[in-house]
Amino acid sequence: NIIQPENKKRGRPPPRDEEDFQLTCSACKALWSCSKNQKNIRAIRAAGAVPILASLLVRGTDDVILPAMGIIQECASEV
Image (cartoon, rainbow, N blue to C red):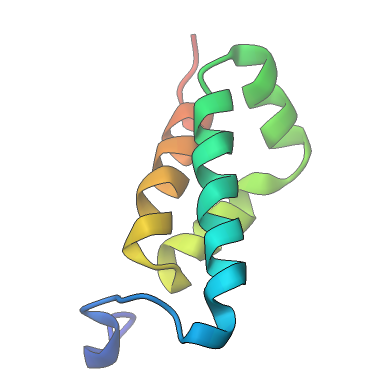
């Protein structure tokens, strides 16, 4: 089963990882903002970011999952 009991409620990471967490969260939010443009979407796809973002859906926290899903959704849509 992919959803283990300890994964049901996601919280903030341990204090030693706080800087990495903030960096990941900020990067996802910035990339989500950039993903509104077709040229940027092509660049995100070409850079191979979609599989990395997909991995954040499984092992990320709630603050990272929403922007990661938003980016994936933008990359999946065609104009």
